Image (cartoon, rainbow, N blue to C red; front, side, top):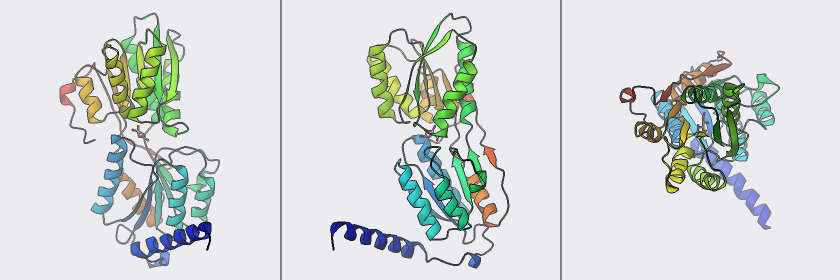
Length: 327
Ligand code: GZL
């Protein structure tokens, strides 16, 4: 048997073992009332790239355990092809409901059509997809990234009300993700017509701290007179702060910092005056996801779009009242 044939056989064997260990394929009509009793939810998570993502994962796992939902949880390690494989394996096992975070917005129609043909409802969470056929999924629950971008702009309009010129560096999230697109578009919409604001450089840091640090080091060597860094997540911001301090500048004072997620480390930096505005993006959507999955398993309809509640923290607020963030 040649190497390729051996690899394929091992893959099939692994797939069957995975099916055998977790549960046998069962006729879907054998479900109980599917309100958490015997409900099997297949969940594809994008990875563990940030404190936000890890909190999002914990929230889903804890909510599933709380409600007695059997969770098949797959970590895609930042690869869309791993997510598509995971969704296909959920279809093979005939889970009751599929939920996933689409790492990027495009490329989901085919696998969602397979789920629809298998009669398995799909819940999209956190990030959105681009599709011409909204019947391919049952609903969405997640964050409103466009509004998050607008909030960043709103803070700068106040902060720089009397300035004549404001030079902005933007460090974006994962290229092609609905979140990076929304945060960029909302930010630009919020500054529309305000010609004194200029985005002098925009680049993707993929939501990673290490990339935020490396990119900011290069940008500081290339540009003088940076007034603002608008960073799409706190993980990258922590790297950006390190790079700014390394060149002897004071983040939060020499360079205004606007960041999104509201993880504890960013709130602590806000309290220290190293960050100026932190826009919450709420990762704790596990209970809502499980509730929606139970409804779908009972054959009930759910809202097509549901945004989680989010707030803004800035230097203009009473920071002593902020509760511990839990991520
Ligand atoms: C936002 C979420 C983003 C976070 C990042 O809804 O998709 O992904 O802002 C995370 O921290 O990596």
